[in-house]
Length: 378
Image (cartoon, rainbow, N blue to C red; front, side, top):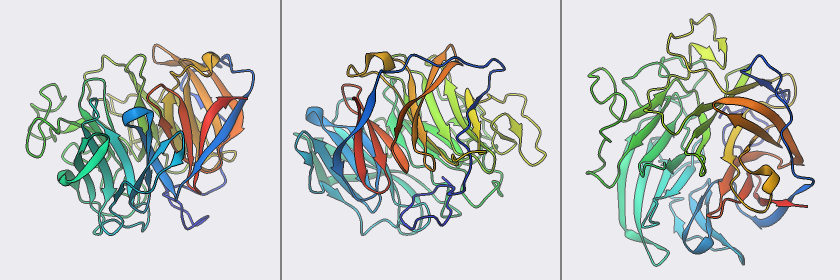
């Protein structure tokens, strides 16, 4: 996300006054999808600058705190730290502990953070009886970062059992090194690796560039500026990415569950559907499924999840997301890769830095100030 000086604790966001106005990639004006009669954000815990969450063992949700600690959220509240790497990471710029994930069997826990030198690092820990085993720690992947912003950092396992990793374009502004369109770097990409298949990982045979000598085998998709939270729909397997814009356009990107990868989302030739600084649209550009400008309060999209819980049946199948500067909890109805409805839940999560999905599909809103709230029926 982009950094501005609105608040010192902020993890990368453009803190400019910009847009809440929503637009779509479709020429047709979408309908308003069916919304729950009344929604509330229920306060469930207070953390220290939470940045990410992941469904864990025994119906828990594990919460990452930017400074380097991990806590467990259950029915009793938030635990003491179960993992602490705060002496090994830095919160300068947009750095810190930025992502966590469990594999499907909950046998391994993964961290995504920037180390003291600013290098993006993914590490693995074994989990036994619901507890992290510190002695099992191993480094899976590292990537040097030329600047302190646009680290990306989100990680999650896909329906295929592979680990997906989001990395921003390396930072500064305007992608000065051209990383977004350069297939010889991991920056500006979503990666797909098999951490259990090799040392330190294996490349899935189906990755789109494994036979291209001029491209990195780890790359799954490219042309991203700073993918600030991505997720897979638990119901369909579709991939949705919130990609933070440079100056004018925030975007949501989408790929179907049957994708074989290789999507080019356009950055830095494109910002959303629009040529960036005189750029030419790539022939293989995959336009966003949704974009919005900055004519209102929004300035930095926070990607979320397709709701698959049971507490709000009217919300089933809708993509829930927000914007760090606006905070409104918004929804998209997406059918066959096209937005057919836009709405909002009538509530604000404040400075929404991330969402978390529980094992049963309920959604939590994470505010960088510390609030952890669950989306509930009023």
